[in-house]
Amino acid sequence: MYYAPLHDRSVNDPEAYWMEQAESLAWAKKPTQALGKDANGSDRWFVDGELNTCYLAVDVHVENGRGAQAAIIYDSPVTGTKRTITYAQLQADVAQLAGALRAQGVGRGDRVVIYMPMVYEAVLGMLASARLGAVHSVVFGGFAASELTTRIDDAQPKVLLTATCGIEPSRVIEYMPIVNDALGMASHQVDRVLVLAREQAGYAIDGVTQLDWAQACAAAEPADCVNVLATDPLYILYTSGTTGKPKGVVRDNGGHAVAMRHSMDVVYDVQPGDVFWAASDVGWVVGHSYIVYAPLLTGCTTLVYEGKPVRTPDAGAFWRVVEEYRVKILFAAPTAFRAIRKEDPEGALYRDYDLSSLAALYLAGERLDPPTQTWLDELTGLPVIDHWWQTETGWAIAANPRGVETLPIKQGSATRPAPGFDVHILDDDGVELSAGEQGNIVIKRPLPPSCFPTVWGDHARYQSSYMDAFPGYYQSGDGGYIDADGYLFVMGRTDDVINVAGHRLSTGEMEEVVAAHPAVAECAVIGVEDALKGQLPVGLVILKDGVTESDDEVVQALVRDVRAKIGPIACFQTAHIVARLPKTRSGKILRAILRKIANGQDYQVPSTIEDPAALTEVAELFN
Ligand code: COA
Ligand code: AMP
Image 1 (tube, rainbow, N blue to C red):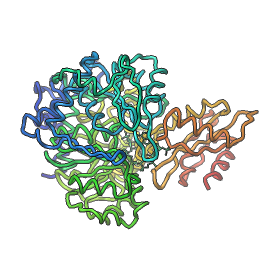
Image 2: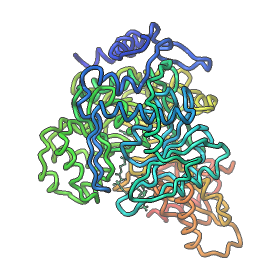
Image 3: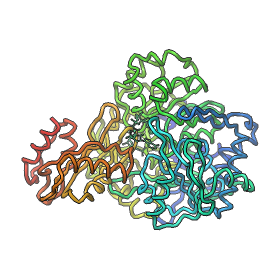
Image 4: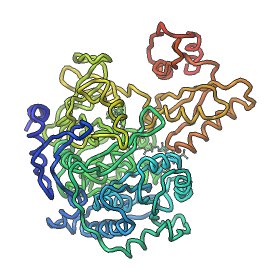
């Protein structure tokens, strides 16, 4: 099989292509129609199909004789715990938790918010919600209480699943104060909170609005799978946009299951029974797709790793896990390998382990920088695959399709579009650009299965953020070019989204927090390149007249505010007090130029600039 004809067919005859892929799933009711439209006019896949995603990820494997195979390996260097859960055990556990959720009134279409660390039970929570036809929304543990509140108010869950703590190498993070704060600030009232008691942090569960996880499960009747329409939502995952309010990306059940399964064949070249490890967190899309759904839908063994690439205990942690569980595919963010390389530049720890099980490394979450790629190439001698995707798509838009044909690797490129993705480069006026010319990366509709059909509760935002700029195309928010061989080079966001240690964050949201400080008259937050984390946010702040605090005091307060309101993962550590900011005559801050100055790139002074001297002041800061 070759990539080019496969991809051509997938975009020229998408309905036939995807109906064929849908054959690989055990539907409750097979779809007879591939593509339809919903009331909003969004493209929807497999409109009359019915299925249950948890059944396909768990029960079907037990029925097909995989009951004794490891489904999930939980490896937690931060607690010194290791556990292997077979598919049969997973089925029993998930049915029990689903029963506990059902006892709290959770049913088809109800939302369940999950604010949990990287433990087995977080995956159970997702699967149990799917089992009932409910909709989960996982919130990453590094987010602060107000971020959790925003998501609770938007998703309006019946039940919240949490744990008494998460564990960072440096400290135990008590979750209950955060959860209680978030619930206190929320307008929406959650019926029940199920709390997983962990021995690292005690908490007096009240037994009324808060229930002990283990007791609730023990008291429950196991619940069976509830079939839903392919177009019913499986989950909502909030992601950063340009404003302070995160967008609830909606994922359906049917298209998602088909694309997940297909991606394991085409992109990762993985078979049932293989051990697949995405070293991410269930709070991110990589965790949803490649810790939970794709490996389990494929009958693989997946890893839930509660640790870091370094410091738990050292930069050999990833290699130890690969050896111990015979991992075939390791998927991580480039920043993780930059952290490993920083501590073990010669790869001495790598050579301590038997890594013969490893077939390839996959990287995503941010651009794979050529120095990291070269280091990994030389160290491992394995294919080092960069692939580009987004929360909105749920799987790779561009990748090296190793399961079909291994294409030559070009550093700096995510290789070629994945099946179903018809990728184009347009200028700001919507004119198609030629090979090598840089512009907006867009995808021609219909988007393939798994791509989101709407923003939860706000379809107008879906249209305005993604679909209106280039009619007939999805606007990815990334810029880049396609070279003469059809390789895609993703060069960075064209909006206010930044990528800090593989985490997607909004500078607009940080600006809202900074601007809310009483001493601040105006501000801009921009992403500045960082050798370890890819980018770091930096604030440029104009103070109000008459402020009595010192510049340093204000900066410290801003750092505290962003940490408290968004969370430690924002990594907002630096702000500069400036006298003025470069603006257009109509008063718009020239953020794109600020980004270029801060990153040492060439820029042109626009004719509309109000005060060119403001540029000089900022340039001096970053010299
Ligand atoms: N819960 C609570 N706090 C968290 C957290 C979580 N789940 N994850 C991170 N944090 C905290 C960290 O403890 C740190 O706090 P500090 O400011 O008190 O030190 C802060 O958020 C910043 O974390 P991070 O940016 O992760 O920095 P780090 O120095 O702890 O680790 C890396 C650096 C590169 C090792 C780490 O970021 C990493 O492993 N990145 C990979 C990310 C990834 O897999 N992304 C998924 C996309 S594929
Ligand atoms: P997220 O939605 O959190 O997965 O973040 C998606 C964004 O991360 C994309 O829009 C890109 O800006 C960036 N990104 C992810 N993978 C890559 C990659 N392989 N190359 C370049 N940028 C990437």
